[in-house]
Amino acid sequence: MSDFPSLSEGADLSEVIDSMSRSAEVLARIADEVEREPLPPGLVAALPRTGPALLLAARSAEGEGRSFEASGLVAEALSLDPDLEPARRDAEEYAACRTDPGLELPERAAHLFRRLTAYLYRPARRHLVEDLVARSVRVAEHALADLALFEHDVVGEFLDARGVWLRGDEVALLESWRRAPLRLWEVLGVRGQEITLRDAGGTGEDGGGEVTLADELLPGQALPGDLMLTRLLPDGTGPRVFGHPFKVDPARGDEMLALLAGPVDPREIAAFFRRPARPGPGSAPTTAPPR
Image (cartoon, rainbow, N blue to C red; front, side, top):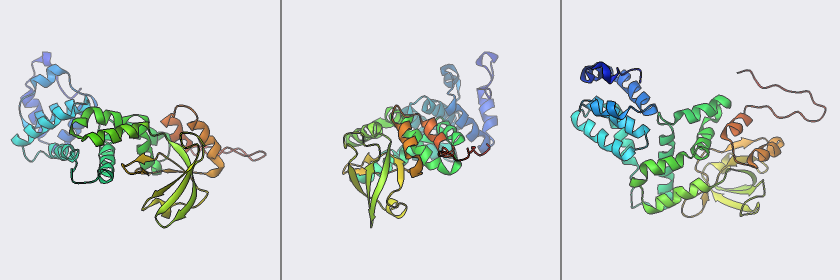
């Protein structure tokens, strides 16, 4: 961390952190950087026991995947400085990982998907989405976030870091999500709040069979013959689309299926939506829009 002097210099870290803490914006920026690049253990041990310093220690632990330890440090920071806004936001996020036991699993599943997305957008992982957006188009960011969650196994990182706060059925559910494949689905029919899909690749245990989902949004956004790239995730009662599907031009369906034939490369999927369709026989070649 270039913002911290070397311990060998005998710097007074109390003065350094006090100086940074005078600006809430600067402290928040430094905390984000610490989460992206955790501090050396010796420097963490040398931090004073002040609210801002404990926030930095918490962010360093979070960046190393130790959310339980980070939550304790955040709580200590808030006991010393209740108005420390970055720590308050972190405390709220940690608390939200503990779901309401009175809710049925499908409701908790939807909540957990939102927690996963929040986890993805933390400073240590935000670059995973930004990299895919840079290779694709900005309007696809929500769908690209779903892609980053699963193809970079952020779900597994979440389980390692925060599984201690989850119930047994929630852990089992998230483990099943890690195994759910990304597939290209053809819309066969729409009726009310139901949509019927067929695996366009004809692979997997269902052999390309049909599946009907109840969904509040998808039926109003799709027509028979449309192709959508997404993964169906179990919610405890059946398959469900939690994220944002990509809409694929039917003329490019085979091109997408080729990308799904082997191990999925999220960068190639992202770039697919930036590339123009391949020209047909006898047609003039097209070029991608300038970056």
